[in-house]
Length: 299
Image (cartoon, rainbow, N blue to C red):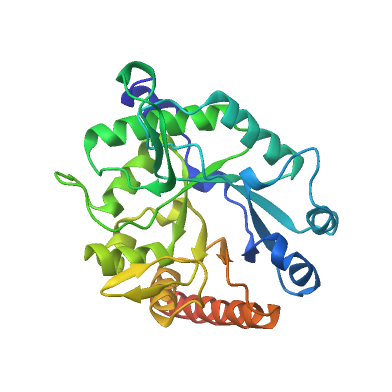
């Protein structure tokens, strides 16, 4: 499918957005605490970590009481040269249906290389690698996103990732790259404000500039996560409390638009659930303040 065809068939992302509220990444280590915690509107699960035929009982109980569950994929490699693996797409679709998900999400990244006609062994990176912000890379990404959209039973949102360095010869800023992706495919965006902060520290990119270029009417939801700085490098660990600079980026976003959903991510070094609840309260305070600021600006 060419770029022109994608533009013709893409649909406006804002038409299918779902109001999610405030949520947290579901992990088995904190499953009981999430279930007992009031005020959690939805959860996100790593798609590859659940089996549609044997969903964890705590997830089933959340679903039965009306908590929305969004599967978050990590292995499609939409930014890679190959088309998305049909088996991986089918597995993601199965999880969306089993969880009655309102949408599914993945990353703007590549995760493998080689194999096929390259003459080299296929290699799995085990990490989300950044896509060069070039016209050629955008064409490939648009085609892969369109293929994924066609195979999935619910809308797709794609996430900006954190990186250490820029590729040489890049032709667009992150904001423009994502804006053109949305324009050409109609895909929704999952904006990780922690990743915007990471790229500010590691790549010298101003989060305010990126937010100003993004089509925020395509925003599906927002990720918030913690990390740490060492020797001038920000590590997006998902294993530390959310720092104030990340909340500041969230506040900048909320001053521009009311996010349909915001989710706290934590993948390791899990603190007592009371500490996670306090972080969620901090996120809610930013959302409330941002909403008042946006109303004052546009009222």
